[in-house]
Image (cartoon, rainbow, N blue to C red):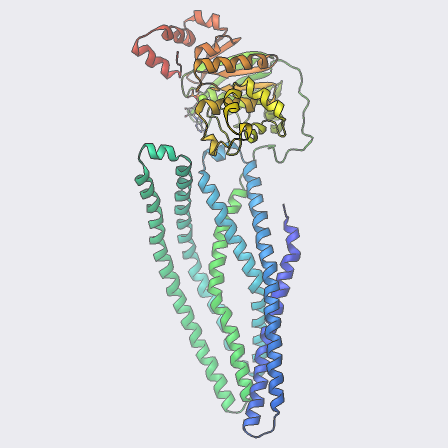
Length: 594
Ligand SMILES: Nc1ncnc2c1ncn2[C@@H]1O[C@H](COP(=O)(O)OP(=O)(O)OP(=O)(O)O)[C@@H](O)[C@H]1O
Ligand SMILES: [Mg+2]
């Protein structure tokens, strides 16, 4: 990735190029002025040589050619710079996003993050490019014009000096109000864009609920709002612009009157009059382009505020991108492998009564297989999130291999854990690419072993392109069970000492699930495994079951022990044997099927 330092030479090149362009532009009025005097001299029979006129034309040609050449060279550098700048800003934004904690993403819409990136970066890039291309040349041109006109007529330069502060003051007045509207418009764009991305990503749901019209209406409503806002914003802007330009026209009325009268009085020649008219015209042009600048600047201010707001978010502590490459830590062989010490947890920072988990005290030993059972929404997945440090515990301490997850480098911690998430989350691309996410550069052999263990080989082998089959966004071209098996294979390839299966086989039929389990059996040997499953048969062979009730640990024991205590597990077992509708409904509350 390019760095900002690399940009300086380019930036300087552009500024220099632009200065030379304006220098050539400044020469033209002088040549035309002299040419006019020569023409006047020849016409009035006061001497003068027509050959000089040809030379003046030649000089004008050379100036024009030089101007074109320099403009294009500066343009070339300008293109380079804006693309590099875009690369730098986008790279930094992504770099930042990858460092942010999970909580940030819980509260943001994907589409919003994307549209903000585009808007912020476009506005900043446009601004810097325009600034490089026209700010310095304009300032230089203005200064030159002021000095030269002062030489001919101090009154003229005085008038010109008045224009600029007046104009800037008037635009600044406009600016504040304009920005408020702009912010409101951006909010609408972001909400609409966020929804847009979500709808595109979940088109099946939209279609099945026939929600197309509703979504379209919602989307259009936001754009209609921006239309309304733009009406106010634009009317205000153009009204102000009219007054600004009117003020400018009045000043120029004075400027022209002075030039004409002074020339008529014989203060300077007709050629000088032509020169002054052209110079003052050159001074006028930047004043009008100033409204464009102000517009760009305002966009850049709003855009960069959003950009820097994201950049100012607090990073996840010792996140993967900032960790030292040597952040490998020496894990002790200490048991328990995972320990919860009086852990409370709430997804909200304010820790109100919204505790999802309370007083969790639990030790899981090396090589143990532990299952979690509890009501849907009971906090099982949350427990897993905490072990991976996706969220910090509100109170208490979680230790892995005897070390607090607060202190252990996140990278090292997450290397220890292979996880299959409840909603198998795959990426677009091929099966191979998805599996390699678990182990970059895995060989075909390794892929086959993992896929076989996860009982995924049976379907992969049937695909015409095998491992190189494209599976669509989030694996949409695969069946639910195929996605799950692929996620299991991906986790297996990671070959981590701790394996977490959160409903990893919930979409499989009993036969396929048995096959996955048989494959896992061998693999779980010597590994600490946490299983959340909604089929009791899946967890019948675990070492211990932990049941959760109201965010607290209810019981801990072997399946055989818990079957006798009359607790949640026993209840579920009994319900499972029952055929009554009410019992089945109760089972479903625990996400359990027989
Ligand atoms: N990212 C989040 N932000 C805020 N609240 C959350 C978040 N994720 C889960 N919750 C809440 O935390 C509680 C526990 O959720 P969790 O996903 O841990 O349940 P679970 O036991 O895994 O349920 P299930 O069996 O349905 O998967 C739920 O009430 C849920 O609404
Ligand atoms: Mg869950």
